[in-house]
Each structure stands twice: as structure tokens, then as C-alpha cells.
Amino acid sequence: MRSYLDFERPLADLEQKLHELREYSTDSVDFSGEIKKLEKKATKLREEIFSNLTRWQRTQLARHPERPHTLDYIEKVFTDWFELHGDRNFRDDPALVCGFARLDGEPVAIIGHQKGRDTKAKVHRNFGMPNPEGYRKALRVMQMAEQFDIPVFTFVDTPGAYPGIGAEERGQAEAIARNLREMAALTVPVIVTITGEGGSGGALAIAVGNKVLMMQYSVYSVISPEGCTAILWSDGTRGPEAAEALKLTAADINELKFVIDEVIPEPAGGAHNDPAAAAEMIKAVLKNQLAELQKLTKDELVEQRYQKFRAMSMVEE
Image 1 (tube, one colour):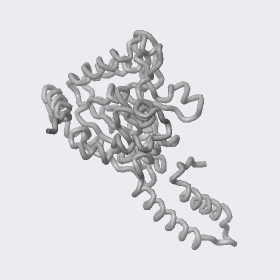
Image 2 (cartoon, helix red, strand yellow; image 1 turned 180 degrees about the vertical axis):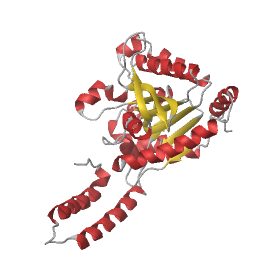
Image 3 (cartoon, helix red, strand yellow; image 1 turned 90 degrees about the vertical axis):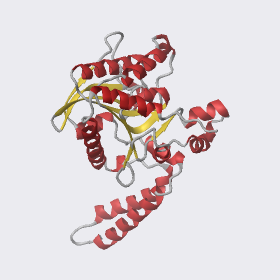
Image 4 (cartoon, one colour; image 1 turned 135 degrees about the vertical axis):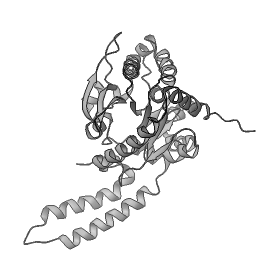
């Protein structure tokens, strides 16, 4: 049974009726006419709902429990996936999956946040919030990719880096800062895709790329709406207001021009509605962006990345 968000409730009722009609339809009792009418009505209603989403509703959509995660995209977009574990210092961090695969036969490195589906998996993955060892594992894979001249793909979907005492004791801030510095200097193509939530430094630690892409219903911000409300107003009920102020949607970020390079469209109703179609859309864009970057020399890749992030700072008088 699909999960529906609050603003999808009218659509849920329609789809439930459709499901019941399909169940009861037989050779002797044909509901095909009614089914077609309801399908047309559901399509129109879906278009109406998703064409008028608020920023808070898009944030909820980016966190949808059925939204595809990194391992889902790895399965559908890449082949020959081989995962690596551990930072060679403390332990493995399941919140970040790292390894190597092939994109249409070409070797690539893949790094991405993994949230988990059920309660057990979510706890195991720490709800997609990496510890410092996760970022150090990611850096280890990036350095291996550079050694073997392999492009790097990262998939961002995290509310932020884990803020626990243990994480701070093991150097959370240092691990993030080191990744920012080292990623800026990588001599291989780096393509970043925000697939769900892009939260603060926890996202940016694997998001310094030559190309930064956002999926249509993803969000990207310096802080989550809930974190913003806690700091500014000490009121957890003002998330929708904070989301509006943060302007964190793909459409908002795209208007800034220098932060992201492309918005990847999603199937009607969001990526969770048709994960296979969403994966195909991602794959097409990744291949195009990689082909463009492969025309650059190593020095040009570093310079292009540097100039891209320098251009994000503007002063208005």
C-alpha cells in the first residue's frame, strides 16, 4: 500500500476507488468505462496538486518514505556495483554508501547517502546522517578514483551530518572541512545529484562538484526548516514559514544561476511514483554531463570547479 502525504489525500481516495474497481472487474462485470473515467480524473487531479505545491509540501515530498535512495539508483542506473566499507581509521558508516560501478560499461566511483526504509534499516543507516568516518570513507574512495582516473558521482539525500557527541569527539567538523578542500582539488570529473534533502554541511561534504544537479522535488539549504524554526523562533510548528523564507526548492536554487547546473524532471507525482522512470531521467542527464566534462583536461576540471564555487558569492549594494 502506497504512503500518501496530507496534500495527496484527495488523490489517495481516487486511487483507492480505482484499485477497488480493478479488483471487482471481471469478464462478466466490466468496469472498464468507469476505470478510464477515474484514471483521467486522477491524472488531472495529480497535475493540479503538483503544479501548486508550496515549499513546505516540496520539502515533505523530498522526504517521502518511498522516495528512491542511492542504492535504488545504483541498481537501476549502473552495473557491476562493488561497495567498499570503512575509513581505515575507526569503522564503517552505513549512512554513506561508497564504491565502484559502471555506467554503460565505463568505470565510475559512486558515493551517496542512504536513509533506509523500515525502522530497523533507518536506525542502521542513522537516518542518512553520516558520522565523520562516513566522510573519511567517502574521501578514501574519491582519492582512489583520482588515482585510477575514474569520474565520481555523488548522490545527496541527508538532513545533515550527525550532531552527536561521539561524532564531534571524532572530528565531525574537520572531516567535513577536509572533504571540501580535497574535493575542490580533484583532477577527475565530479558530478553531484541532490536526490532528496540537501541539508547543510552534511550535504556539502560530498557536493563540491563540477556539475551540481537537483531533482525536481528535492531541496537544498543551509539548514532544515525545523532547525531554522528552533533557532529563530523556538517554535517547531513554524516549519512551513521557515521553508518559504529559506527558498530551498530546485526551482528557487535554479534561479540563483551559479549554485546548480540543471534540474532533473521527475515522473508525475514524484520519483517514488515511478522509480524506474526517474532512474532513466537521471541516467540520461548524468551521461550528458559526463560527456561534457570529459572534454576538459585535469587542470581545466579543477579550474572550472573553482570558478563555479567562486561565482556563488555576490555582493549587492
